[in-house]
Length: 159
Image (cartoon, rainbow, N blue to C red; front, side, top):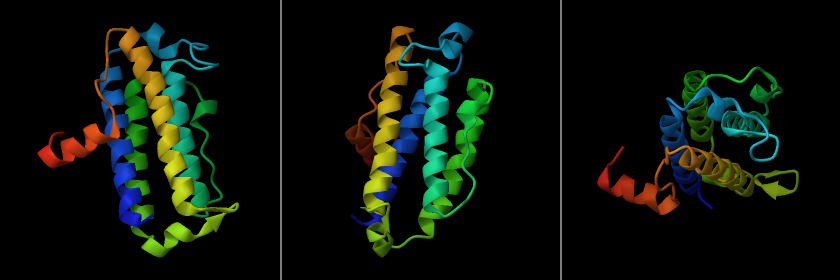
């Protein structure tokens, strides 16, 4: 897999995550903060976990000793979580820009980077789908979040 393919996948990840976060703005406190809705998490916990996993993978693969765990802190507001994602995305872009196509074949724990990075995007998809289901149940569907929806939005230059 080429670096451009991974960058496309992370572009999709950002687009879909932003749609879910935008839809979550204004959700009632009970919907946001309820635990034990899907596994031990509710809407807010799911989205905080998705951020934490994203951060930990980036830190790990970039060789950083820091391992962020936002899930262990108090549940942030949706606005605080959006700000955290707005900090994460440029950090990811900078790290991806430091890589080359050959970097996708580097191996970490027996797996090539491209597989690990594809996993990060896929993990985000899992949790976005959980969040989207909870938002839809609350009458706030984020709409279609599929990869092809993102690709079509790129072609039509939609936000």
